[in-house]
Length: 286
Image (cartoon, rainbow, N blue to C red; front, side, top):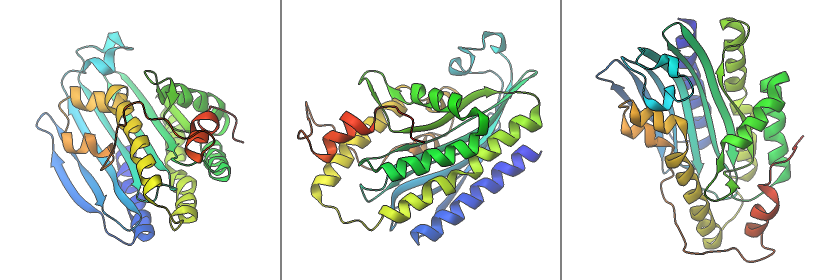
C-alpha cells in the first residue's frame, strides 16, 4: 500500500536528517502488538543537540475502536479498525531551541477512512524570525487549507485548565477525506515533507547560543506544561492508551525532565514573562 510505504520512508528520512544535525545515532526498537500490527520506535537520548527525541512509525489493527475514536463518530462504535502513521517529538537541550511535534496518520474503520496530522512548535524563548519561518513553511505545506488548519491548531493545542496555549501553534487537521484518497494523501504528504524545512533551520540558528541555570529552570517549567497537555488532552495519547498500545512508544513524547513550581511567576518584563504576555498569544505570524 502506497500510504504504508510512504510512512516507512518518512521515518527513515526524518531520522537520517536529525542524526546529521545531532551527530549521534538514534536507537531502534521494533515491537509487535498482540491484537495486530506493530511498529518501530526510533529514539535519541542525551544527544549533542537533542536531550530526548523520538520518531515513531506504527501500523496497528484492532477489533473494536476505543472511546476516544468514537466520541465524534458513534456510528463506528464496535467496528474493526486499522491505523498507520509517523509521530515525532523533539526536545532539544538548549532552552533557546524550541520543542517541536509532527504527526501524520491514516485511519480506516468499516467503510470510512481519513487522514489527520499536525505540525506545531513550542518555544521556551520567543524569536519572531523563528515563528515567522515556521508558519511560512506551514502555509506552504497546507496551501489553501492553512487558515483553517492554523485556527484548528490554535484551538486544539490549548491548555484549558491553564487558559494558555501550549506553544505558537502551526497546523492541525483531522477527519480529512476531501475529494478522494489521492488528494487527501497528497495533503498529508505535503505537511510531513515540509517538517524538516520548517524546523531544522531554527535549531541550527539557536543550538549554540549560550545559556545558564536560569534558562534551564524555565525550560523545565515550560516542559511541565507540555506534559500536562499530552497527558490530559492529547487525542493520540488517549487513543494509544485506550487501545492497548505500547506504553514506551506512546509516552515517547514526554520530555526527560520537568519541574512544577508552586505559584511560580516570571519576573515582570523578563524574557520569560514576555513569552506569556506577548509571544504565546495566537496571532497571524505571516
